Amino acid sequence: MEIKTLIDDLADNGCRMEDAARARTLYESGDMDALVRHLRKCRCDLVEVMHDSQRKVDRMDCLIRRTLKEAGRRS
Image (cartoon, rainbow, N blue to C red; front, side):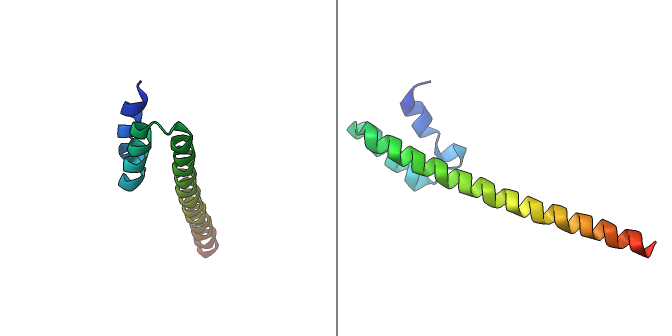
């Protein structure tokens, strides 16, 4: 797949519209070093969102376990 197509799909893959536009501008200007740095930053942002979601899932699992444990004591 062509790089330009991948950059055009960034917003569809969870990147902010501003980040996708910046990537497109860097690509069109031919500044590949800056583009790679920008893409790495976008990746880090997505990883942080993923970690935040995982923390939320972990807290929900804890709540479920505690609820089950408490329900078991009442029976």
